[in-house]
Amino acid sequence: MLSVVNLRKAFATVVAVDGVSLEVQRGELFGLLGPNGAGKTTAIRTILNIIVPDSGTIMFDGKQFTPAMWNIIGYLPEERGLYRKSKIINTILYFAALKGLSEREAKPLAVKWLDRFGLKDSAHRKVEELSKGNQQKVQLIISILHKPQLLILDEPFSGLDPVNQILLKDILMELRALNVAIVFSTHQMEQVEKMCDNICLINKGKPVLSGSLREVKKKYGTNSLRIEFEGNGEFLKSSSLVKRADVYQNYAELELVDIRKSRELLSSIDDRLNIRKFEIVEPSLNSIFINVVGMPATPEEVPAPKTAPATATKQPLDKRLKKELFSLSVGAAIFVFSSIYMLLFAKNPDLLLPGMFLLITLFSTFRFMKMKKTVENERKKLEGGAIE
Image (cartoon, rainbow, N blue to C red; front, side):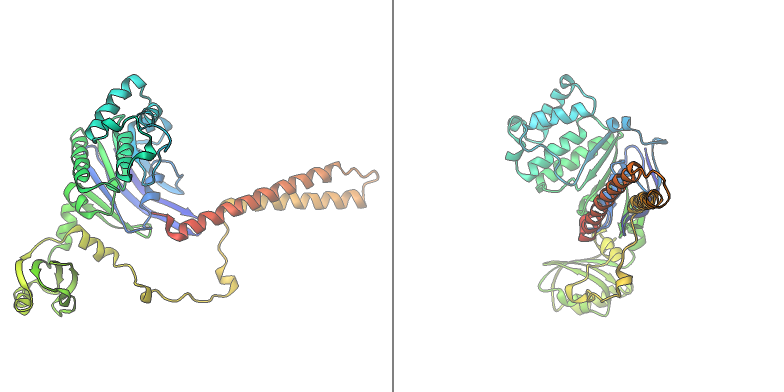
């Protein structure tokens, strides 16, 4: 259904997506994972042709993207994209019309899904009157109302309470049974573990782990222990037998240096904790995620910024800026030469031609400054962590 090969997208000096490849089949749930700022949202927007990629191949059923394909794709963006002053039912019908559905076709489906999500009695309320979670439900309805063949969801569980997370999970499993290809990005690893067939983990724009969830767990699951206990288990982090420890209130997931020494570990902690469960398990996806990506640096671990020479801090020009600068330079050069020729060599100087190139130069200057501001805003946004 969806094939992506060596996808790349850069903004000014930031490479948001670098060499991402993935395959998603019909009837498959695919998890696109990564920490904040990894490039997940940029990858999704590029796949959907909202952002044009710099390079790479994106195919839908063996064909390149065309505008007509929007009607077979459902997309849930991470940001709210609803008209806050509009009534819920009108908003749903409007987006359904954009997907080619008539009001006669869309209205019964809208009522059905509103009822499924517990919003039937709120159909004529304004969007702004809903909670964050209920607005998320409306966006989910919009993304699936037209019965898409490919469904792409960016943080679909955001704002949903546990009950509605289960409801969404059930709906996605139903769509999967109807042979819909589903891609979703989320930080909630437990949802990925319950639902996904295959995953792709990206970090700093690059793919670092991909494949079937079963094979990924098998690869990282040789030295893992799960312990449930009463007491303070923080000391487990400093044990010489433990390579890595995720310790919570009454639970810990450990990766041992040598799994054969699990009995030795049990003996060393038996008198310090009240053990309820002690078992060798495959690691959770959350622990694999941390193991591959690493923990974020604490403030004291972040190196102090270094003062660099002015020449070293200059950013390379964006291609768009280079194009505008070239136009400006050509116009200015022609203006200067035509002015000199008219003043020094022409018998009957005609200022019309220099005047025309002066206007062109001024217009090119305006376009260059406008593009420069646009590129700088993009760079600041991306460097501030806006790429997700």
